[in-house]
Image (cartoon, rainbow, N blue to C red):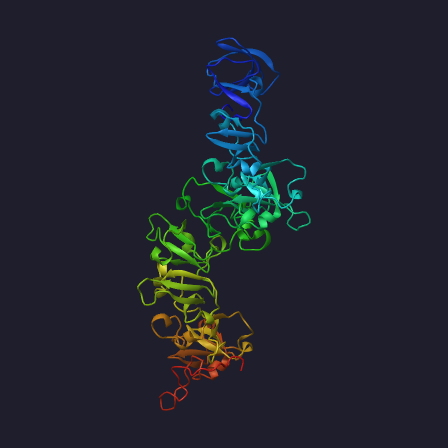
Length: 612
């Protein structure tokens, strides 16, 4: 009690000094007792005291005499020594700096010009200054003053030590007092030195309620984690009877913005630890570390640092991450370019680094490939090994999402800077951004990750060739064949002549048409096969006919086995019927003499047939 007593209200007087009537005598040792001094008797004190006898459960106050042995000291109300308590709005000085009191805390004044000129200032002793609050109390209203500045007069409410912009007094309570402070103190909140009395972002665990009467999300409650507001589905998840600060709902909707909106993050900071709370649920209490805005499951605190603070959040906020409305303060997957380090002491891959591309972790062989001095977030290596899984493992993809653009980095290599688009988990070479969409973000990865795609261990987050059934559209404006749709079978693009021929339209990933023409070649072209690999089973959609591909030729299977049916890829029957023609990526039947027929082609002549 003695150490935490507010200096604004009390002088702290040592035990060796004489006591005055009205002092609070404090024993903080084995006695742990507080009483009001009536008289100092030298070696003892005459006191007005309660809770004097075992079992110390209260009782009426009594006048007693008590020895000063183990006395910690006295708390002397400032009214006893003639000094007025430090009040709201007072200007005080300490250590060569001037402050204004707001919410019981000193807020730095960088220039009198922001507050209407010089004012009387009360000099505080170290004891008095250290007795002030570290940060203004929650709910305190302050107005940033800087005449001529665009934000002059803006009002903020304190939540967890940080100033949150107020869009309307209706959101925080009308007729509440507002303390004018230096706008610079708000702009530089969270910096060191005299600026540190306002926080950049609210403390973890701070509860805020978004206020906007008439809005569907009016009064929704959020818990602050890593500077961002995470929706609370039930107070059971964050602790009942916790104080909640009303803020403008607009401050939550605009979190991560600039100007007045920059005191809440859009997503929690990297490395923030969350615990998903949902009593009775199998995943209750599971812990996650934030990386690129997404919650990544933690199997052991050894992987993310022991003794780190953990913020309780609703498990539903994790399950609904990447959603809209109240759920949009956690990402479903980490942002592209996020760097992770897989932690599993003793494992051969402990400390391996990955860059996120399209939600998947791609192995990094050198920081030169992804940018030096980038922050890296430690995660459990198991989260990388189990990426693409279900339940707690579903916050990393197994392979990058279709349409993700990669740039292979290897300074000095002939293919350094080559660009690829992901289709069915594989990187397909791009000759022009016109073929995949201009102004798309591109993620730098190690070129070695592309060269080793389809490998094992650290290399298994890119496929060697697109997954069977992937639908792509070959793009090359002005070129014959532009817009042709293909379905991947055995690593090769098989032409689709009409959506109806494969059961209806589907989402197609735009790839470079030139990549289909050069499929099967070496180097950057090797991530598509020109013909399906031997053993591929095709199903002619709508015909119920099954085919076995051998050396590029589809041969009908009169009696396919259940296994063959199970791994068959549905393709356009017309592509099989037209085998050997351009864009089919199938060879026609052999001639009767055993040679190749005239329809056999190793390179298509071009010409779009989609929709014919």
